Image (spheres, rainbow, N blue to C red):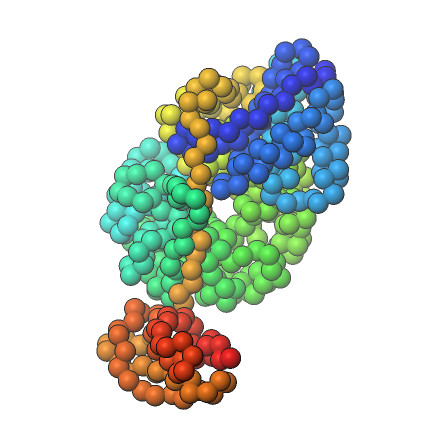
Length: 464
């Protein structure tokens, strides 16, 4: 079953998606998702310039052999661009293999382990009342697991929530460069337990409650947070701190029994090996599109099962419906399944990607159509050209600075190079968590006023 064609499509029916279509000499086609939010064009180029030409003439049935060839052949392994491209190839080949066998993918993987896949939705709001209203709407739709995110008072923007009431959650910002958003850890830590308290007092404990911290906390802050929310019995707290330093999760684990989910930015089994082996997490969040496709995800899930770690695959709508279709087949089969993220897709997106999955009572099923059960309308996709968009970047603003009353601040005068003279005077009122410092560069370049953040901002001023 030789491969005779491999095409890459970049389309934006509301969001940017990178889709790979592989065609065999028998006329069977397979689809794969290679979307990498904010980096779609590099992945598309990697596929077009490197992988697609090498696919032509290969046997589409040799999925593992092709996976290993591209993984080892890259030499520069495991990066998100490389692994997103490999993931798309892998998904497409499994789609072809299942179609050739005339069975849905989950049957080819070994058959169903459950009747349906429990999915969780996203509930957001600018205020707690908005969140409660949105929660009630999702509860009425039948969701048994609900993620809650809320705007934090005193912060202009909060990552992980819709930009307006009733609007779909869209974290990416249109434009040439990422948006920088101010973040206050103290305000977040003070406010968020009140959110959980309101949800539980209003709706009780009938639904699984999830929350995403988006890598914003330090290990000790995450430990403090997990400890103080234990009474609300969260299904998990997600990405409490950047997982590059995996040893730091030992500290979090020592202080709280709130379950931890990590892994949506991981690209291979090596990225999560220590966290799983030491049982520092409870759910692994790797995804079809970024961790090596079906083949890569099977390795991770099999390894995780040895340590009672369950899957909780990343599934936002900035991964295309092709990824969601593959994930649902995988979820229906994998023995150590936990939950699947599902944000839903717009009507526009689903017109480009006609699907076969169903939703009922908080559970989804991929359907029994051969392959992934997903299609791609190339002509319609061509009407939605690529539109640059990027995920925002957090600018930390972590320290409190008194009660917010007018106060005396420190003014620093540099009379001579490498010499500081401190004088006290009233300066304009800074925002909470900020220290405004007047810096006079006498005889050098006049005066300027700067904002410094931190517990001891005077230490941050360069003197030269």
